[in-house]
Structures are given as structure tokens and as C-alpha cells.
Image (cartoon, rainbow, N blue to C red):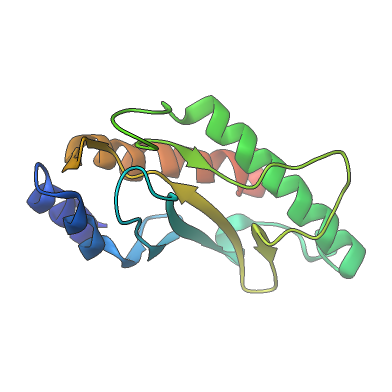
Length: 165
């Protein structure tokens, strides 16, 4: 977590390509954040990320995901909760292009197997996208800090912890 904060402070105000340096894994108090792919510029497809919450922290009883149909239903439900938490928490677009947006695959009426959420005996994992904030092609480091250290933790707490559902 401190590493990510230091990187964001270091690249604040630099060119957008400097965001590439934040790719990697970061430990937060309740989850791990994986920055898998960093977008090339603020107008490109948003950056791909994952949050992984350990089974004990997430607190879902085994019976909620025992069997394929229950697992599918829980993953679908959590995807919907994650999207709701994004809508409640994320400030939205700030800066150029897709800057500041947070998103997860939208769900229709059907309960379907989702690639956006994985629940197993070890963890709950949400896969989502973030438009890293910039003004033009200049990094807005303080806005990125807000996303990583305020918004994403609130989204995780509101959507992926059994005690908070």
C-alpha cells in the first residue's frame, strides 16, 4: 500500500506513460490489489485490475458457494453488489477521456457465470477497470490516490465482505 502511494506521489504531474510503473500487486488491510494492465493514455480502454479478499476476511459460509449453481448465483450477486457499490462510491469521470471512471461488467436479468467475479475456498476476487486520472496527458496523482485509497477500499468493504451485505 505504501509502495503504491509513493509511486503515485513520484509520478504526479508527469506524462501518462509513467502510470506503467504502478503495475503489480499491493497489500491493503482487507484485500490485495492487482494492477494487471495499465492503459497507454487516458482515451484508451481503462486499466484492468483485480481485488482479492481472503476467505477468512470475506467471511462467506461455504454453503453459499457449494456446488456450481450456488457459486454461479453468488458470483452474479457479488458482481451486481460491486457495481452498486461503484455507483454509490465512485466520484466518476475527472479529467480527460476515461479518467476517474471505475467499472465492472454490467449484468442483465439473467443469473449467469461471470468472468468478473471468482469465489472459491481461498478468496473472493473482483475483476474491474479503472480509468486512471489525467488532465490531457498529465497524471493527476492526487485523484489517483483518492481512487486507490478511498474509493476502492469502500467498494470492497461494501460489496465483498459477507458481514456488510
